Length: 65
Image (cartoon, rainbow, N blue to C red):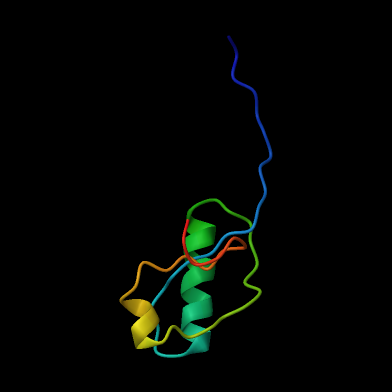
């Protein structure tokens, strides 16, 4: 069987570290680019320390998946 090519798109969330919002944005863009993903950063939000220690996945169905 011959493999076919597919275009797959979606909404992705990355957790990155940085000194500020700009560095976090640049890090996320670099990860996407190096992974072959043509993506755009839409929102950047700082994670509070209490959120950092939890198993946190901010998705449409809530923090637990």
